[in-house]
Length: 562
Image (cartoon, rainbow, N blue to C red):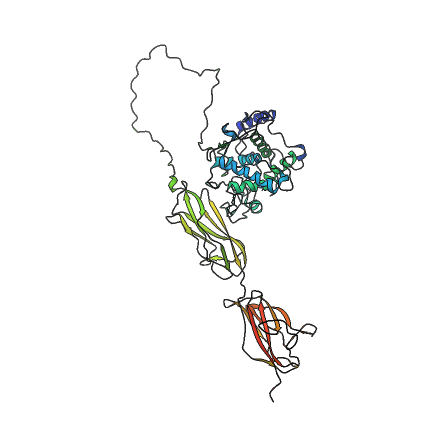
């Protein structure tokens, strides 16, 4: 996860100078200090560098390095309660702010000793994604389009090969940091949490991502009210001293006052367009503000000419009209892919060898939130399973209909039981991926029967000439490794082990009337030899399986005919 950056993302010569001035000013006004001295043993990198390894939540992927404004939201000592208005940089989109505060409350009830402040989540969210790209989330808190870091392919970044089959990042070759808190898929698999109670763990959802980030920061019995533990927590998120300083700057800035702004109106940090990253987006306007003029220096003007110049001959028009380059066409939002959602997929479970009754179904939407037809969706079976789509395929690409929906082909379970996932990925420039949990259960015998119908008789004090053969099946198919119990019982109405009549022998040759056995291949089993004592009569052998299938066999002990 340790990408080696020669120079950090989005930072030119001018930005470096501004950052230095900002740090100095912030330090003078109780803004972030350098890492706590006690944390030196945990910070094993030089400023701006990253540590090799794979322990960072984000894979040490790129992040915004912009520092907060020099003018803090409130004066020292004032309340940190949210005012209605304030500076633009102090504004946090409503859903994003709600997610941070909900995460703080959740951790306060499950890990009160951590003392997680929501402003720390806000600082990390600002640095990682510009507060979910200025709060571009839907009503449930899910980003309107994926926020993906660059492929961690070892070329300027860490080398992290794919761990999720592209389920979260749409990349089946290398991992990418995902969502507003920029988790790499392998870390999300461990720390991902359902923060909004919808039954899903989605790194693209700000509520899920914020709570998961909080749990990650609180790991290892940390107390985030201590500077040492807070530094360690931030460095564990992205191991860079520069990253720690930047997060600390925003942490102190937000602690001095913030306010809520509508979703989608948050201020994004400036972006170095030459960074080549697909992580946080640039400012929506994409423009540079004009330079200001000092109030004490009037703008330069050109004095009027002393005399009126003589008229000049009119210039002849060019013979060839100048060529102009038409402005680039703006994509039609109604025809542009925006998001992918679950369209009513039920529980995906089946018995080995059978078809799943439910199918994965998704819906594509355009940037306006309306259904989008003719969108390619790739479905894939992910995990160590032999479950396949119809035709034996593990990957298939289909196109949505006019209502924006498309179902995956029918799944057929193989012989291997266990859990796996089905992923659905759509979009090219900004892929959107969904993941659906599925499972295959092993066959359980529903019937046990004899393999022949021979009468079983023996004379008193002898052994039965024929042995009992049985077969355990599920819908007619033999089930291997089925646990079977064979017991000599008194009668079928009130079954209890009989203390007389036919019996088996144990390893020491002693009589036993109950045996625990297991079927072999194809569910077949031949019981051990059965012996008769000196008591004549008709007896019952009962054979049962763990699933409740039952078979009774009649045994007769009688003297041979004269």
